[in-house]
Structures are given as structure tokens and as C-alpha cells.
Image (cartoon, rainbow, N blue to C red):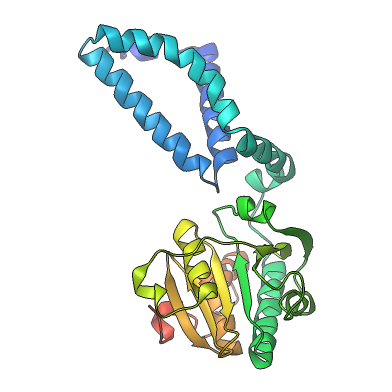
Length: 286
């Protein structure tokens, strides 16, 4: 009988539990940091440390090894201080969202209702020529932007959205951020796109919508105050323009994969025609 590799001869229940605990801690740290810039900072710091430590050991650099040996303990203390806002926010989110980590997908009826309310509000804003900017959060969290806006945490309704963007009201200048079927905050400031190709053609709302899609996987509905035109930004700056109420509804359902999820939950239900990829259906995509 062939001998097992040496690593398997050293594995016992305690070692397996030890490895699982370390993996769980790493997963928890990455999960807490997801959705904000801390994720990129942690990734960059990990890559830098691995590269420097590997170089120092492979080339046997005594001075660099000495510096690393004295700097790493200080780094362990410095990291929680540097990432203190993200850690606090992440722990709060962990306390609220443990059921979401191990639970099922978002409720299809609630998501469908939110899409319907957003669609009707956008059509009404378009008719009234009221500017609007609505951000639908997906997998990448937008809590950093939510925290800098005016907290609402209210159910998505067309009446609420129209009230938010009514001209000269305190909340109309900025974006409303939506998570599932809740309006988390209004008057949120979004990053403007640095894309030169769009800068001279589009206004501030469109540049802000493209900017947030370049930093996250969010979907943004824009209603132009000048023309009343409805547009949707998604996928790192892709823009679908000249939408009416029905076409907007189909775009949102396609991007949010509502029909795919619905078929998964209820396999017997047939999907209606004309709801394929939004980019394949609509003109005006840039």
C-alpha cells in the first residue's frame, strides 16, 4: 500500500478545526470589508506583504528580514486603527445580515413590487420634467454613500420617490439609494465619472450615474430634468437611453434577473418573450 503524503499523516481533528477556524476568520474579514474601498486596500496590502516577505526569504536579505520582523507587530495594531470605520460598519452589518449570509435569495414578489414602483415613479418624473437619480444596490455594498446621505430606510413607493425629487425640496439634489425594497437614503453624493468621452455630452446626473457603476455593480435610473428622458446606467458605464415606462420595466427586470429567479423558484412558469439581454433590445447604448 503506497504511503500517504506527509501532510496527511499530520492531520487530526484538532488540525482540521484549526484550519477551518483560520479560513472562517479570513472569510469573515473579507465579507465585512466587501462593498467599500477597504476591500481593495486589504487586497493590495496582502499582495505587498506576500511579495516582500517572499523576496526577503528567497534572497535571504538580512536587513529586510529584520525590518519586517519589527514592523509586522506594529502593522497588526495599525490595521484595525486605519480600517476602524469599515470594521465598525461591517460588524453592525454582520449583526443585521447574518440571516442573509446563510439564507435564501431575496424575495421575488418584494423585488418585483420595488421595480414596479421605481418604474412608475420614473415615468411620472419624466412627464413632470423633474430630474431624478435612483441607485439600485446589488452585490457591491454602497453603505459608504448611504452613510453620507439623509437616512430614510423607508419602503419603496412611487409617492416617496416623486416627493424626494420634487424641485427645491431639501432632498432633491442628490441620489436615492435603494436596497431590495427599501429606500435607504436620499441626497447621496455619488462620484463623477472621469470618462472623457461622456464628459462633454452628458450632464452631472449622468456622469454621477456612470461614476457609481464604474465603482460598483449598481443599476442607476436617471431622469433628465431638461428633456425628461429616462436612462439606465449599468456594467461599468454602459448607458441605455430613450426608455419609456414599459421598456424601463423590462430593462430592470432583465438586469436584476427577476425572471430567471422566478423560473428557478417556480419552474412551471414560462417567461414572456422579449426579455433577453437589455443591451440586445434597446438602442442608444454607449
